[in-house]
Length: 99
Image (tube, rainbow, N blue to C red):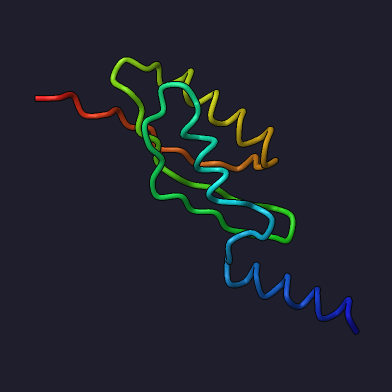
């Protein structure tokens, strides 16, 4: 009975595309912001599509002179290492130059 209840909770969470339990969004955002040349992360979306597969999507603003590919590689490496999330969509944009 207990196993069935837990399974139903997991299935409902997947069907509702709820935020994945066990993923600390604040820690993830803070860690990405600590990657060199990252200015800000916004909006951060984390959801489960199966009981074992988590998806992540967000925008990253980087400093003007940063190399897109280098920052992208560092962000993905951090997410895979710290959170074991392999399915990530990241939109990178440059910080606006001062006028």
